[in-house]
Length: 104
Length: 228
Image (tube, rainbow over all chains, first blue to last red; front, side, top):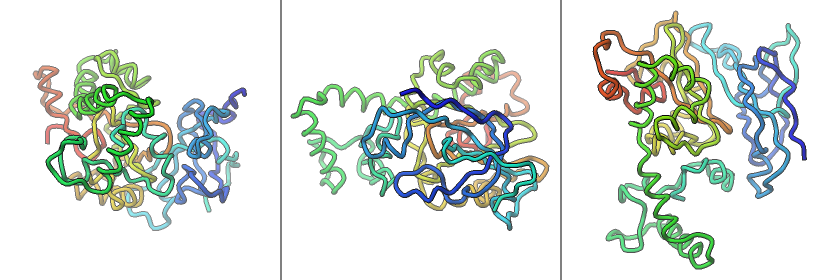
């Protein structure tokens, strides 16, 4: 099966969605529904949501590093205003975000 | 169970309900993997490990020699390997460039085989201090650095590093000025990370080996600065 090609590029604004999916998912709850920027296009990896249950060799999924501002993650964040966090998100957990779109 | 080097995901993923590594090392028994002829009484995990090991050998899936070789490789991994990479990057800008581009390839240049899928090297700058955490389990570049420190695996660190990183860093003795960004990297999926710290001032005359001696394990996670 052909690997999915990355459709987000460096600097793209993205929303990390909440798929509400059970099982071995790698999208932490604290980052769901947050808007950030693609910081690094990592290549494609087998989907851990499948591999965890022994389904190996499937279609590989693009993986991105997404940078979020700490003040968007935690409304009461006490650090500096430009403190940030970068985490790895698989393609199917991302949607394009508009310029004015904010974290929820 | 003793195999963390291959890429810890197949291991992590096989146990969705329990991401904490139940490694014999973490039970305070022996600094070495459990053996059939250990003098200490076996706990639950040690007994399970030995049973699994003998089954794998009986079924012909692995040989005792292959298991022993892997255990030896695991024990070769130490923070010093990461420190060597950092010291080399400080004295050789071209190497540093290659290391930031591809951490695994740079490690290979120094004769270090990183078996995780990818090694990202995150550079500290005068404007940005980086801290590594794995909030979902305890992902760590084990084939390079060996087992992570116990605090790295703790639920307290894993939750607080993303929520209040400056406070956590202060508890480690690091007070990062407000003018410097603190950037936390959650190692939550397929990549593994080390921090490339800034070279301390006043180290111009030091050799590469002397520089490597300044770089502790915690520097490579971003919880400390070199030479402190």
